[in-house]
Structures are given as C-alpha cells and as structure tokens.
Length: 286
Length: 267
Image (cartoon, rainbow over all chains, first blue to last red; front, side, top):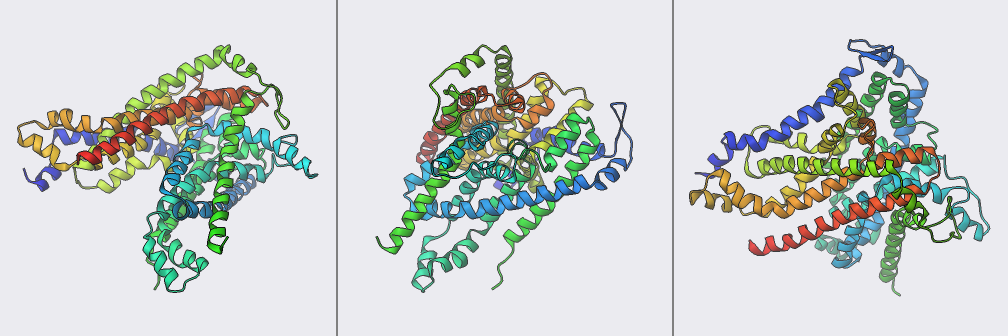
C-alpha cells in the first residue's frame, strides 16, 4: 500500500476515528453557540421563552448607557491587564530563557503549571482576605507606618485578580517562545556592537513576536471574560460584561438579553483575535 | 560585581518576586485553612482543625464531592476517547478541510467560559437536559477534549510511522494494528490525559454553576459559600481540592516524563 494511498483513503476505519469529534462539537459546541445567536432574537413572556424573531433585545441592550459603560470598562480593564501582564512577565521570561540553568528552567515551568490546578476561586478568596482593610498587606504596611489602604472593591483589586489569573500562563508562553531563539544570533548582535536594550528590542522581541502576541491574546481573552475578580475583588462596580451576563440571566431570567451581551463579547474577541494574529504573522518591513 | 552579574542578579530577584506574587494566594489559603481566626491577618491566630471538621461533617459538601468525582471520571473517559480519535486522525490522515477540522477540535478554550456557560444552559434546557450530572459531563467534555487531544498527539509524534505499516505488511488488519501497536504505544499519554482532564473538570466552576441545577459540584459549592460572606471553610475545601488535583497532575507528569524518555530510546 503506498503512503499517499493510505493517507487519503476514506473508509469505515478512518471514519470511526474522524467522526466522534465532529459529532460531539456539532452537538455540544457549535450547536449551543448557534442557539445563543438565535436566542438573542427570542422574547421572554411570563418567565417563558418564546421562539420568535424580534429585534427587541438588541434594540434594548444597545440603547442602554449601562451596557456601553460596562462595555468600555471591560475592554479597558482587559487591555490594561494585557499590557501590564506582558510588561511584568517579560523580564521574568527573559531571565528564565537566558539567565538560569536548564534544570532551574524545568522546575520553574513545572511550578508555573501548578496554579492551573488550584482553584481560581480559592485564590481569589485568598486575595480577598489578604487585601482587606485589616488584612495581611495592610498589617504589614502598618509596621512601617503606612495605610490602611482600601484595595478591595476598587479596580486595583480586580487587576490583582487578573494578574494572578494570567501571569503563570503568560510567563510559560513567553519563556517557551524566547527559549526557541538561536543564542548565536543574540551573540552576533552583541559582537556587532548592539547594546543590551537594543538587542532586546531589535533582535529578541521581533523573533519571539508570535509567542508574545499569542500570550498577550490569551491574557486578553481570559481577563475579558472573567467574572470572579471583578465581582469579588472589584466589588462589581463598575459592572463588567461578564457580571452583566450573570445578572441578566441568573437573577433576571432574561436569557435572550444576556445572549445579546454574550454575542457582543464574542464579536469583540473575534475582531481582536484576528487583528492580533494578522499582526503576529505580518512580514516585518525591511 | 560587574555589570553583567548585577543585571543577571536583579533579573533573578525579580523572577523570585513574580513567583512570590503568583504563589502568595495559594500558600496563604493553605495557612489560613489551619488558622483559628475567621478573618486571618498578621499576627496569625492559633493552629486549628476547626474548618476541616466543619467540612467533613457537612453532608452538602460530601454530596458535592461525590458529584464532582462522578463528573470528573465520566468527563475524563469521554474527553480522552474523543481526544484520542482526533489525535489519531490528525496523525495518520491528510484530508480535505483538515484545517477547519482541527480548528473545530481546538477552539473551545478560546471562548470565555461565561459565554459557554450561558450557551450550554440554553441549549441543554431546550432538550430538557440541564440540571443533571449528565449536563455537566457533556459540557466539561467539550472543554477538556482539546487538552486530551494535545497530550495524545504529542505522544503519537514519537511513534515511527513505519511501525503500523510493518504490522499491516505482516498481515495484521488495521483494527488489530490499532489494538496491538497504537494503543499500547500511546497508553502513557492516555493515562496522563485521563488524570489531567479529570483535574480540569474537578476545578471548573463557571459552566458547572450554570448547568448543574441542584447537582452542585465542589467548585460550585465554593462559589456559593464565597458569595455569602467570609468563611474560612473555603480555604479548607480549597486545600483539599488542591491536593486532589496536584496528585492527579503529578501522576500524569511522572508517567508522561518516564515514557517520554523510553519513547526516545526505542526510536
């Protein structure tokens, strides 16, 4: 049997392996998402959903000031978290990729995976206690005569939560892409008289661009959709879109209106994801 | 110290600070779980097992633990099976629309959980499926399959393509080659995947919160306790969940690493 023949033939055996994911994703991934779009045109009467085609939910949500203020707040906070996390993670990833031994790097990578398997809820609750008026941080600050500061129920609290969520993943992705860079090229840049900072921005960053942008994109996706930090650490004032979805669907029983908010979020994410990926793979001008 | 050494030292110190930030809430929650104060601060209160006693004697938490375990086991089996099928299809076949096929398989982690949660709730309710353990399993399988596929695909990368072909030439059918060669070769990845997907399912709260109804899982119980007020039981439950998940992850890691070496040697 020739290689090409073996690879392109479609038979029972091939289908058995190929079909499960298609069926499963159609039923439980694409199905729900398409239904979400359809649902945004449904109406709720007497706590029952009526399947119809009506623009009422869209008109209502898009004309509300509270929707737009939470839209811009969520977008702003997620962007800020992305920029902050990228800037904060880079020196650490740089150190992991170039300044420590291979063994230390392996251990560091393992420890960066650990947070994924600790409950994000518990970590958030932990910050809640640490950052409180009488919490550990203010108690420590009091020793040097500062504070107490209010950190909970402010955007600072939300940001601490976002960073806790995204930093491990970001350092992991950045380190992976930085350690792929050919060390000889960095050496060459140094030998040709390029200074440290110039080498970072002209050699290292462009070469790790795809990894850096993908990392930042994941930061954005995670903080844009997260409801735990803005709710518990940010006190849900101002509301984010994720909290708006929860309030509208859980308390208000208005699933169709929540669907409108969800679709606006998805659209925004798609636009940003496409822009980021197009940017990451764009040929450098030279 | 010269300039290079100083910069290197500062970078390493910074690395340490960043790790400290990431691990502060994890370590603090373990410490708080053994602390008598309802609202822990510095200086710490006395050592106490009060919060553990409270959760052990709470029937709601025991019930949630059982639900979580059942859901995690079912999810891990389903996700690993579907992940295996997809990874094998990708490894062995080239076909039309393979790009979209892989995108379909790997896309779920890029959709915010809160949106998946709402979409799942509405879709499953339409078919009268929401509010059961089954509904959590269905949703968690979607979230876990990409991880299962990635792990198994990595292992298949190390398999020599001629191994299967040799079995066929010796008269084995495709099915028996699968049973005798592919499955045994990928077994370590299959076990890793079972552990990791179980850990992911065990920790997931957003989708579970929306679709579970009265069949709460452990993270959903945590969510509801946290909504009430300051309750250090959360730290005790969190520590318990952490130990469970880490055990699964470490097992997965050990099996995967050990066989990673073996795989390289045998090639």
